Length: 74
Image (tube, rainbow, N blue to C red; front, side, top):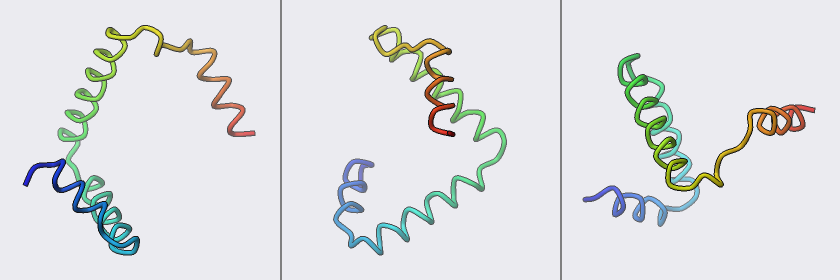
């Protein structure tokens, strides 16, 4: 079964079953080793960098990001 097939099947579950599955999946991520976490973050950083290389309009200044975060915390 591919990841897409698994995702489609999971989305067909009733809400209670989806919530239980989501909880178990999130808990499994909390048990990753430091090396596994570092690898995932490196892959995510590379994905985001490639995305920005493809479309510069996605870039935001740090000032904009910090202003948005501060407004959400208020």
